[in-house]
Image (cartoon, rainbow, N blue to C red; front, side):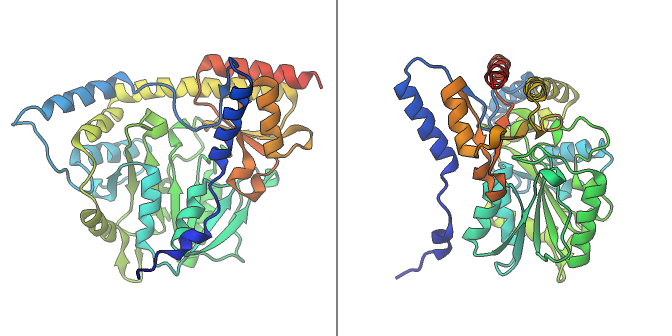
Length: 396
């Protein structure tokens, strides 16, 4: 009899969004006709920009003609898209060769797949609160997971602890769920720590396009020494509205070597073995994001989400409630008022003002007592939710 991967039995129930769905469903059944202001899920609400839509249509037409038809694409990505992404990095002052860029079907897929590069006996350090998939993907592999707690005292941006040693280091900046962003000085400490210990940083840069402060790094490769210790995983989901279209990319420098093994070459071998590449149509749409017109249009959409964040931040400032995120990220991480627990606050907002967010406890134990708002909703809903928040807590 075949033995399944018994580590799946070690996974905690994925109850966070299931519980949210069940609670909101029960509320609507008990209160028919009520409208919910949904600011919990991290999904975009604006459509793909015009430049991307035009490129997708052009690519579909290409597939209808023999002389422009494309079958299997290069497993690591079409040269035209890899080159466009490398140029995008060059504009940030980061020099990459196009064959250090790997096109993927999205950051979530890649964050799981990339673990193929590491022995299951390796350990993983996760800064919490954290995107739950970091933990679950390593539980499935049977890895030892080291949890590094962060909190209000360090603005949810902890420094490395020399007493903790791990092979894989997860860093997400701007962070999901907290919206906190590491400075260059703070990231330098993590890069130095990784190089000193032979660790590898998995840098999740899915929200880098939301950074507006010029002093804050968009890429780990802006940090000296990162090319010998880091892999960067990025996505077009939130930056360009590709949540339903699925496209991302991963950067693995050629200098990244461990035990005589070159991780860039290893990933080429992995992709050419395990994938048939991302479709031509989607890659053409992705390439349009990096054109001058595409960049202008996606930034206009991002600004709408950032305006949503501003409305929520102004409401919390008015109420004197502590929070982080928002300015450089699409998430706002707030302290639950009155000492409420995360789920208690969820129920309170749902029942009192019909606002739905995400309880911080779902992102790890140190998220208890905090709450996440997503700013990806409509401006109209966000404005009304902010108004309701102020009205509710000003009564108290």
